Image (cartoon, rainbow, N blue to C red):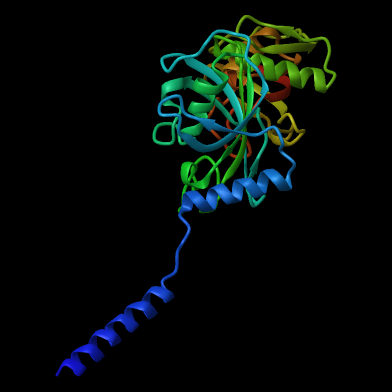
Length: 305
């Protein structure tokens, strides 16, 4: 009887030893992200990256950063409206969003999180706790568990699951949407070597090519026009030719047209460089990304009052 008990006890110990030997240790997602970021830094020679350590508890966050330009403006708080642009690139290189003119955030800093704005909460940490002041620029490496996790996202971006992100954020030292948009309009004008423009109080830039000699234009005028509308990369997103002119009541079109076409008369020609607020704003239209600057050449064929 004792021998049988001893044999059973030995067999139990043997099974426990076998199971223990077969048990596999799995890395946590935080550990995998940490290893992935370390490899990314080494592969891309990002020697200036520092891991952000929280002020409370001296805890390492897993987020790495490099301040590219320190801010020199006012200190920002959660209750401040901030004006910033950003770029986002997944570590696998599949998802790349680098058009800063298109990717913007204009709202309260406290709302800059994944739940409210759809952007990683690490953005808010970078702006509020690292940059701190307006006018700065920062590069971030955000681990996947603090970005869009295992499920990824198809909201603002298309990011696959378990992808860490390489981002830049530029925090502008401005206090109005018009001033913010004007920065990018002026960049486009300079890069395109456009001259002879006049700026209105609303932020619209225009050049009268021919003033016209016919009927005067008012907001309630019914107008007929031919035009070409281009994006800043030269893409023609819409046009109307002589055979099929565009017709509308002027007050029913985008604000830039309502304002700009009143500067000429029937038979006139005008060029309009339109900031997003006077175009389609942050809403995407067919062929027009959100926050697009628009470049119109318009000939006013007819005016009926």
